[in-house]
Image 1 (cartoon, rainbow, N blue to C red):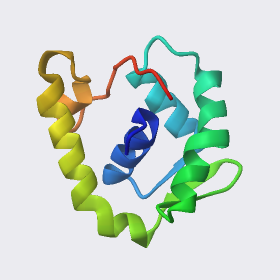
Image 2: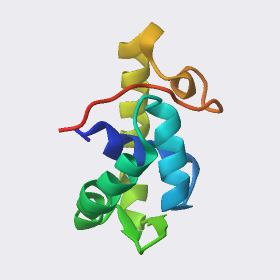
Image 3: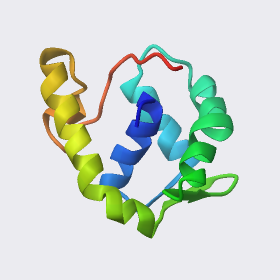
Image 4: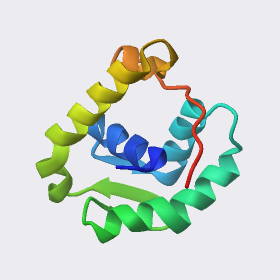
Length: 111
């Protein structure tokens, strides 16, 4: 949960059970408006998705990503993390954090 992109992937799965990598790239690029989509795609494939898969939270192939039952056991924790992030970022928080139906646009630096 320390890496923002991993958190964003988990936040995405609070409302969805499956996604394509393209879906995740599109959503994260909205959240990180100043980051190139290809950079996001590379970091997802080589860093973030493998890490989440190691912990059994997602399963993924070349283009599809699915949350697992293990994610279901952490759903409440992830929702609480999103709520804390909402509160701590107040004015600077991503729009999706202001209301569950809007998209996020937050510049984020990675490791």
